[in-house]
Amino acid sequence: MLDEFEPVHAFADATARRFVALFERYALAGGATVDVNTLAPMIAALREAGVSVVAGALSYAIDRAAAEAAARYVDGAARAASVN
Image (cartoon, rainbow, N blue to C red):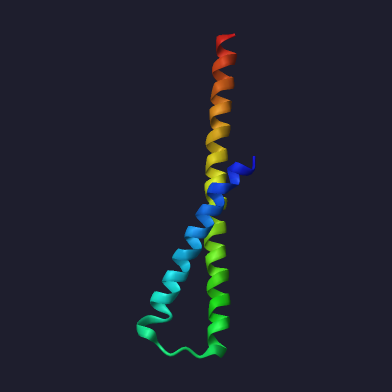
């Protein structure tokens, strides 16, 4: 079962690196001087935005996959009932 979480962790690590790269590209563009007092709240806000985006996307994907699986079972049960 633990092996099932390895791809999730790999996805999370890769996604975190993408968010950091985006932050560096846009918030720290061109070696901009950064005020330490504004940097921490900016990182916190972007972290929350990133977590929300990933959680929303994962929630949607799980709902869609679960609906597809349920449909397969319902269709399979209906076919089995019509054969009997």
